[in-house]
Length: 401
Image 1 (cartoon, one colour):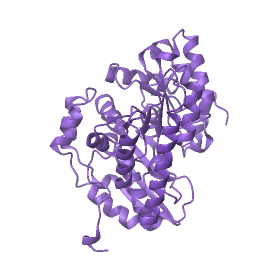
Image 2 (cartoon, helix red, strand yellow):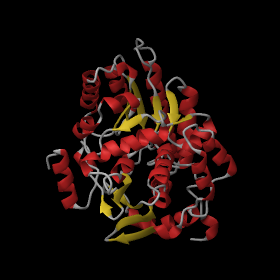
Image 3 (tube, one colour):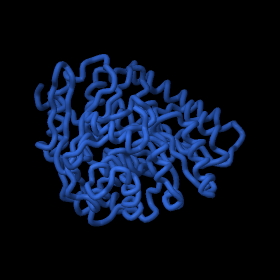
Image 4 (cartoon, one colour):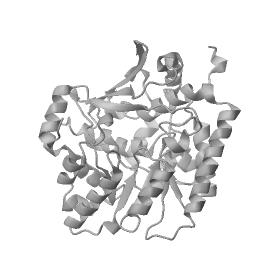
């Protein structure tokens, strides 16, 4: 393929999720010496082999490693009150280093591994997923597919307008775009978000995509992901049993009241609630659901707050696990008179055009030479290749196999 035919997927280092920056800053300040390994995972067999994409992925990563944060992008980040000036100074010097990420194929499967200092490799994740998705779906970028995508988007808008005719509840319906990681394309995500911003401004409150938030004057949304808490499983000064408390405490100290949504499912809701005592329940603004039955999760969270004598109506519950709009409306109707619900909708917003979306992730597997694990309440989301460590983690937190 000639150089002239190359079309970059990523053109700005802001074209990533906000929680990458918030976790990045925390790691730079708290654990700058950490080393990590992230691996690409394809959870389902796709229609077309991903291994065929390897040469183009290599070229896209070469291009990614030439990018720098622009002065105006750094100014935007500096304007977010929770982003600190020394972190922006670090970003002004930062660029991805190509030797920290390798692409290969084995037995027809695509393998991508990023390995090195965590503050130099942790940001690869979202860019890798966006690159794989957009290259894969380029074959589907036809007028018919785009027309179907626009028809489905109009249906979503019609559903929101019908919802607006329902009786008002205590708290409003708030939706954010969480669709960068599995988007059909950069252009399509921009079209979807800008269309919803114009058609449903009462409901679309933000996007996880920092570049889009800047371009469309939306709120950038996000706090922490699993990798942040998982990293603390490998920090030697922390007992494994206490890793969640240590991670939450460092977050509190880093952000001092900002970004107060805690992720609950790294080792399951039972283990999280055991650690989420009155101290954390008062300091954090709310919780994020990402595995297990969301109705059961929400009721358990409400009961926990009430046990601590905290009014759950003062807390934000963010639902983000494989949502579509009808499911979000179900959850809203169930919870909106008791808590402040919010919904992060991803694939169903940015890759709902007819072709089957990919189910791909890039996860932290090692930190400081030690295994890490994600052990949530949805068995299909368990990530760990070290069965001995996984068994130990289950034992420590009382999780059945």
